[in-house]
Length: 463
Image (cartoon, rainbow, N blue to C red):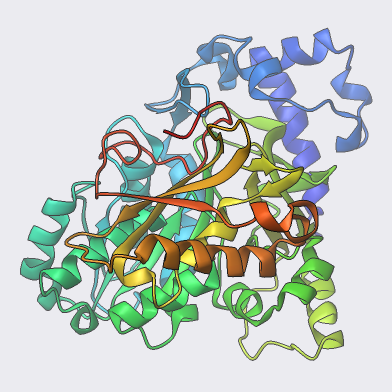
């Protein structure tokens, strides 16, 4: 009889305690005897601060030996952290890609996979490329090309290669892929001819965004043509959207979402294999245990979210008359809002980037913008606070003269609809955001080649 997921995670804990020098030292500091531990709840949390940064890289690896490849993450502090990789890690994570690409029917259809994540020491590009090659070795009809985050190179190779395949899959960060799609449309790229699919990671996006992308690329079924991955530099891919999780997410009203997730805003909703990545929920944040080049036990990554067992999810949907039509894997669900510090506090209300995103995805606005913006609570000349949204214009955008007002109205409408805190906490005369328009690639707010951040600290003043 197979062990339960928690028993498997407990076995991994014992193995790591015996073979990873840094973790043995960490447990000793905490006064924990691994032989006496009977459940994971008895084990202290590890974090980047209390574990990763306190121990040298070799000691965090099994038997003190660094793996055959390294990735680098800088996180929110800019301080580099190194994460070892191995073919075994990639093979395990490739199962998540397998689930996604099986929904795309790449077992049967010739598929061009275009890796649009940044290449180099960062985790996204090379890791994704390696996992896709694992899929090809397993029998998927996948051919990989990796132009990375070079938009010109992506749009150069696509017209040459796309016609030779049954479908094209772009893999990258959501705002970058939207930029590629919009620029391609302006250049006459026939996206619909490529039967385009998208695999995204790194950011929460709205269902309006998914529908907009589907419309612009001619996707017939967004639930089977898109998928978001939940991944971290620390441990690779932890979970993935499935057609089932996407159908569920697209069916939820703000009221039902609030009952299910505790908030009306939509998190990313994914499924995961608890034997490969064992999740726990603590105080509204996520912990995970998983085997990697540097194994992690009860690692706290500061992502807000929670867990919903498969049967519990189906029962909830049934009670609300939302039973899904799509069959899916009988795996538990994890939902992820992202990091709590990626918000702006305004009159005591937390304003989330995804609240703003929906306003930019409405028909009067979306043709003229890339989807990138920076959210700030800035000080005015009168020392008041103004919620300020700096928006990047699309390539060759020619918006009307009153476009900033149109954007502000759209953001306000959906901010009030989606964020009850904002509607109740912010005085009526202060609710309408100040919108500033910047050209594509603006050096101050939208520099090319840099991972975009949607918020800035509240210590800047309006010009």
